[in-house]
Amino acid sequence: MARLGIILHGVTGRMGYNQHLVRSILAFRDQGGITLKSGEKLEIDPIIVGRNGAKMEELAKKHNIKRWSTDLDAALANPDDTIFFDAGTTLMRAELLSKALDAGKHVYCEKPISDDLQVALDLARKARRSGLKHGVVQDKLFLPGLRKLALLRDSGFFGKILSVRGEFGYWVFEGDWGVPAQRPSWNYRKGDGGGIILDMLCHWRYVLDNLFGEVKAVSCLGATHIPRRIDEQGKPYDCDTDDAAYATFELEGGAIAQVNSSWAVRVRRDDLVTFQVDGTHGSAVAGLTRCWSQHRVNTPKPVWNPDQPQTIDFYKTWDEVPDTQAFDNGFKAQWEMFIRHVVEDAPWPYGLEAGAKGVQLAELGLKSWAERRWLDVPALEF
Image (cartoon, rainbow, N blue to C red; front, side):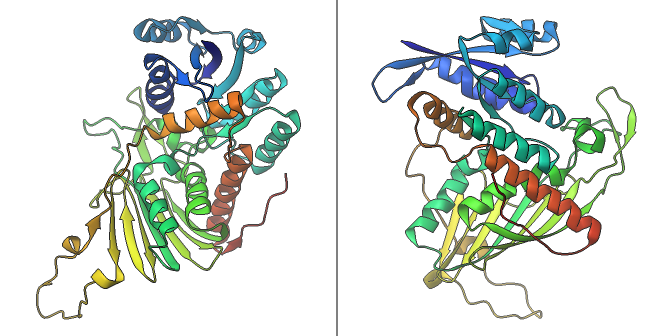
């Protein structure tokens, strides 16, 4: 059995712990590794690294992880470990990835890769020059619901795509009346890398680019709807960055996308994120896992009549797209793609260049809000 050593940094946070450590890396371990094209089994051997030794030791014991450390430099110096992964804070990410590249490690990370476009570009260019493998998480492309949208698109179901409407978000409790917040307080502090525009426009860039057409222009309005929240220690703090974003995008090919993102919205839709795609021949609505479609021959013909209650149950006029394959956890599926890219040189379209594009759109979204105008999205040079 072959072995692949992976350095995991920042896996004590919610996303790093649940999706990357438990549901991806440890899932590979528990399934006996990854079967390579040669038929050989690849053992995944992680080392978890963080500043808090007590947390690292506790996590290692809980999950029977053999290796942990508080010394990142020593971990990077170990030639037996090939990949460095970071799911820590945005503000530290570019420096950590640059250090890992200098140590000769392939790098994989959460997004955004920085809060500054020039830093993100410099990092992507450095990774390219190094000849090492590099990648950024693009998890929403691997959601079953969005994969079904891609299947409909590839089949020609939509005809010409006209528009995309996305709704993302949920009510994040303020923490001031007995219900603790379900997101960390740094999300609402600009100095800690918070803000929903920086967070979510990075996601919408790769979703739109890969599924519906490259983003060519953006108009974005941000808001800080909840100005004061309670932190993890029960202390009040001022929120100085955006907790909602209302963005419109022009896409290559002529489609228009509108995506609302908010941590101050109560959900009355099919899922925490939904995308409706309307085309000349058909439409579809997808959530995280499920997808419904409506072809033009099945489209009802409503007539506006405010004098009587609506007679059409519109939800019943849509058909669910069936599960025609088993979908693995999206984070795990992308992890396997990257590991195969490193070990077998398999195709990989999600390099740090994609991460820089996400940072670019977030920066332009913030600038659009500040200047109250549309902005073009120029091509980046790597």
